[in-house]
Amino acid sequence: MIVVADASPLNYLIQIESANILHALFGRVLVPMAVMQELRHSRAPAQVKSWLSQIPSWVEMRTIAAPQDETLQILDLGEREAILLAQETHADLLLIDEKQGRLEAKRRGITTTGTLGVLLAAGEQSLLNTESVFQRLLSETSFRATTQVQEEFLAQCRRLRQRRS
Image (cartoon, rainbow, N blue to C red; front, side, top):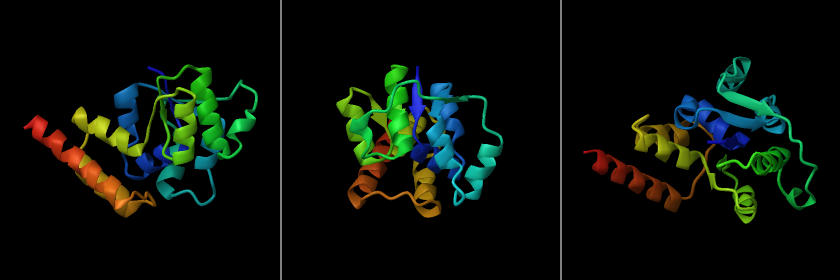
């Protein structure tokens, strides 16, 4: 399975000490160089800086071979490169949170999921307690979700828990 990650899901998973679930779920994850640069921002959280000092072997940094695509100019550089890398590698999945980026990826036929989708997938495989990790995500990071999204996520967590019981 080929998986490409944008900065946001990586950033949040690192902050809540759950980045290794990406390896457990997908094996390796391709990360464009622009995404790595975004993660290296001077105001990046300490956990992210620490993670970057010893990038796991399952993270494969990639340079984009495709020419720049003018239709992606509304997105930041990391999102643009993540979408282009997903196209270039015929990725099975693109990890991206930002709405505009997700819409553009879907328009191009790229399957996407975000931080919450990764948490649910990990919960389905009993890799973590989705509800407690979600609470950490909300309380310890700048992650934001509408009340409706939060309620739906927690409802999915409850359904997961009931299926496992």
